[in-house]
Length: 137
Length: 137
DNA sequence: GTCGATAGTGACACTCGTTGTCGATCTGTG
DNA sequence: CACAGATCGACAACGAGTGTCACTATCGAC
Ligand SMILES: [Zn+2]
Ligand SMILES: [Zn+2]
Ligand SMILES: [Zn+2]
Ligand SMILES: [Zn+2]
Image (cartoon, rainbow over all chains, first blue to last red; front, side, top):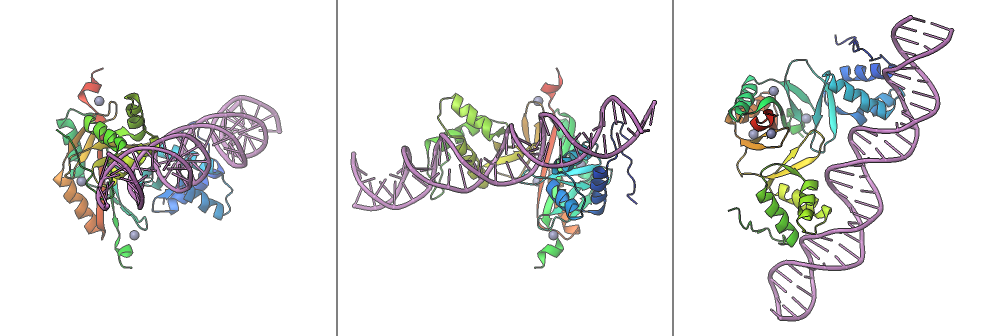
């Protein structure tokens, strides 16, 4: 289903490393840090440099192919997401992630910004909590 | 008059450095990083260590006396805010900050989290844009 | 006012996520 | 296949933030 995503961008070559990273991201459903992704790839025997992982994730994020989540510590986490605009509901214990939408929020943000004379508006909305599974311990 | 905010907390002493930091925060209306606050205090002749600035801001944030904003880089910025729950509308060019409220957003976040079985919910909402002044250039 | 316990300070070393460097290597084209 | 240049990755460097610890300042007790 999430099969072959052509690099398509001119000057962007398909390499073993990029294929491995993209493949792993397709498997995972929660946000993972660059270091976690690097470790997992190494564990699987894919020799790959940490620098390359950082740069590839950065490029994918810039291209809008993956979402970035900056937790409290400033450490960035990455996740392959659907294309349309959405936000995340994340378990602060296990990292379980749910994509959520909220037209009301989108309108509110635009309206508030306009009322104060702001333009070219963007916004960040993240919801953190404890999922049902993590609560029953 | 945002005059004298008593340290009041037992074991919390009033020092020249803390008074200077609190005083500067009272003057400023936009988010400033620890380093910017440190520089400004030095410029004014208040000899003060960067470590102390970091720790004092951390303590004030923990005590809920100031708000923390983590920009894209992970660098934290601080600002004295009103006490009730609110969010921020920030100009990405000049840093001008407006406090905004949105009951609709609060309810939406709680409802969405509950629907997915999440508890102990918190959220982060920030709106970025270009203020009217910055647009006319 | 002075004394003393102790919270606070700050120069410095250090952590850690992330980025810069640059010679070696790989890819895709002609 | 040969080649230009994109890419890789080990290593060094960067920068925000924290830990350390000897020195200092605060403030309640006297
Ligand atoms: Zn969970
Ligand atoms: Zn949105
Ligand atoms: Zn502005
Ligand atoms: Zn809120």
